[in-house]
Length: 190
Image 1 (cartoon, rainbow, N blue to C red):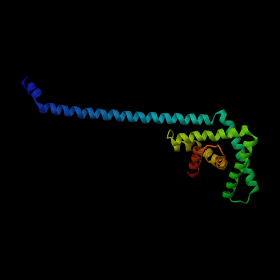
Image 2 (image 1 turned 180 degrees about the horizontal axis):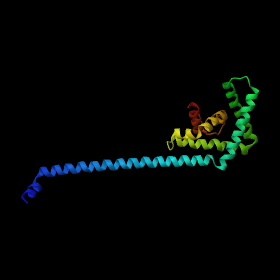
Image 3 (image 1 turned 45 degrees about the horizontal axis):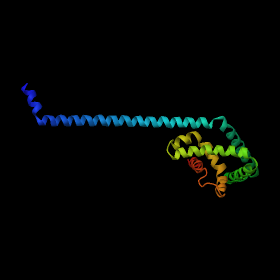
Image 4 (image 1 turned 135 degrees about the vertical axis):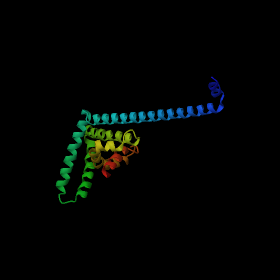
């Protein structure tokens, strides 16, 4: 019993016990913080995966199906027409001519076929939303490119000149479809 009394009265014992308790407490806090951080990373990955799945489902929806089909038909028609008229031109020249033809077609469609024009604007609007999500880092650019690289390249070729013209019009907000075009540029350079 005298040993127990000596230990309890020994200030060095309590100092060491306090130090050991502090070290153990710090270790537990670090472990808990590490666990919480991995949980947050897992939650973020899960939410990004969910968002990508929702974007993919929206892109494949019946609403977007009509816009995708219209876009694909116009793209094919314009490409065939330009290629037939300029069969001996280099690919880079044909590419520029295709872009200019898209500008003409979209301008005519805007004034003469509002329903189809608005359907195509809805199509690029989808990519505007995706681009905003990438810019805000809700989803990774690499993941978006894995899903939508082809369509992103196509919308840049097809809409860029038309949008540049629209931005020159009075009353059109600066930054119209800037996120979609930025994604398209990124897709083209990869």
